[in-house]
Amino acid sequence: MLSFLWFLIIGGVIGWLAGLILGRDIPGGIIGNIIAGIIGAWIGGKLLGNWGWRVSDFYVFPALIGAIILVFLASFILRSMRKAT
Image 1 (cartoon, rainbow, N blue to C red):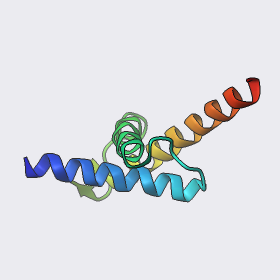
Image 2 (image 1 turned 90 degrees about the vertical axis):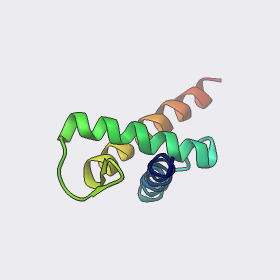
Image 3 (image 1 turned 45 degrees about the vertical axis):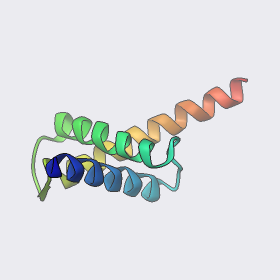
Image 4 (image 1 turned 120 degrees about the vertical axis):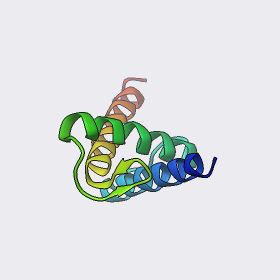
């Protein structure tokens, strides 16, 4: 149970850092940050492999880069949808 809690916390921090680095807000607040961090970790792991620091099943650098990619794409898609409406 405790490892799952750490998984959510680290995922949220990685998602928050990705939004902070890009200067773009992630929709959904804390839940959005957690989702962006977890999906970003998966994307980063697939693109870059597993290297660097490991914290609670997350390799920090690939996870952060994957989350940055995810936040950038999500904000680009949401922005273009708002303009189309």
